[in-house]
Amino acid sequence: MTTAPAAYDAHHAEAGFWRTWVFSTDHKTIGKQYLSIGVFWTLVGGLLAAVMRWQLAWPDTKVPLVGEIGPEVFNMMVTMHGTIMVFFVAMPILLGAFGNFLIPLMIGARDMILPRLNMLSVWTFALASLVMLVSFFVPGGAASAGWTGYPPLSAKPAYTGVHWGLNLWILGLWSSRRSSWAASTS
Amino acid sequence: MLNWLSWLPENVSTYGADVDGIIAIIWYTTVVWFFLTFGTLAVFLILYRRRPGRRAAYVRGERLREAAWVLVPVAIVLVLDLWLDFRGAPVWAKIKIEKPRTEFAIQVTGKQFNWEVLYPGPDGTFGTPDDRQFLDELHVPVNRPVRVVLKSKDVIHSFFLPNLRLKQDTVPGRPIEGWFEATKPGKYELPCAMLCGFGHSGMKAYLYVHPQEEYDTWVKEQWS
Image (cartoon, rainbow over all chains, first blue to last red; front, side, top):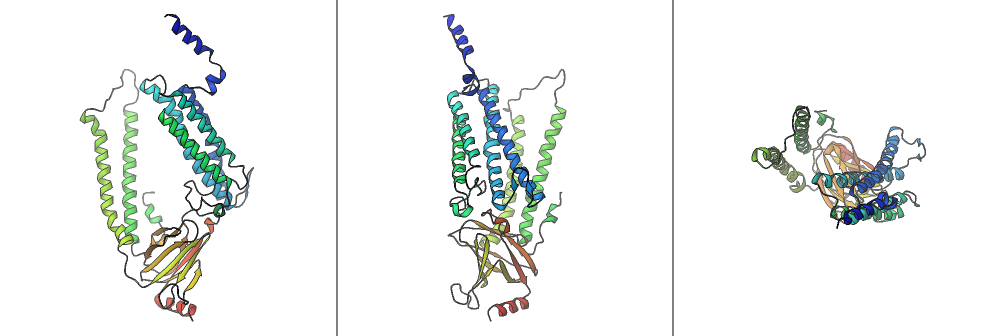
């Protein structure tokens, strides 16, 4: 009987790099993972805001690294900035990072009730982030129908000139929502 | 900052003062409430800060005296909300429901990226050969109610007349009626207020409000 806790501890200590830092089920690690992805998106979203401000301050001049901001690009910046700041910064940092890290500590629980689902949630979110990031580099550029994505503007490529960008946008958004669903369940 | 209502575009609408009144109610209540709550927060942060020798109180929020900190503000917000509703409902009814009777109708169709303005012509009915269409210009006489039938050909646009305090989305496949009555002649902006594609920022028309004689002359010129 006395060997059980020792075996448990031994097993715990053996957990390798991958289990500890990457595919971890620990609520604190998951919270930190959410925080790192969220901080990355804060930088991207902030950059988009800076580009928009540049265009407003000095209209039709070249922005370093980005080039000239036409109306199509400006709409892309507006759309992606809104989407990113709400769904890829505010939600993952407030709920994913602080929620995961603090709530078990505040209520005195050992971890989330469904730690594996919690891990699935952060990795679904990472996948959603990847899809969203890729959408900047496809032909036609990123989504530009506003972050509200009202149809018919968002529904027909002819209206915005953006095709794959919008498909990836809705796919990324949908995956990030599945991630929130998993997180709130766990 | 407190008197930002004076920054609003010049009001030339018969119901503009009603709309501005509602905006003022919302503005002043939220400003007062903002300073009240954040002032309380700041005072409490300083007054009850961590000090040596003082233990934190464990507040369960169960006794009525403690729950009152939540219940009283909720009650105040609810009363303010109802007050706003009772003040706002007649304004909504005046603008959206009790439309004035008028024979003067114009059809405005949004498309990427212009406003098509259709007049029924002297016979007063749409779909007849004397209809005339103008691009990005709307002419109306002063002091006369104007009925606008708003349509869209492609995506959602928004018909916005800031000086007349009228904003209404135009939705494809669904004509929506609005009305306004201008009280002062002049040239006023009519931008699109709903992101509608890459040309959205340039989608702008003008409303020309003429004195009656000037308007009659304009009609004579166009339909002669």
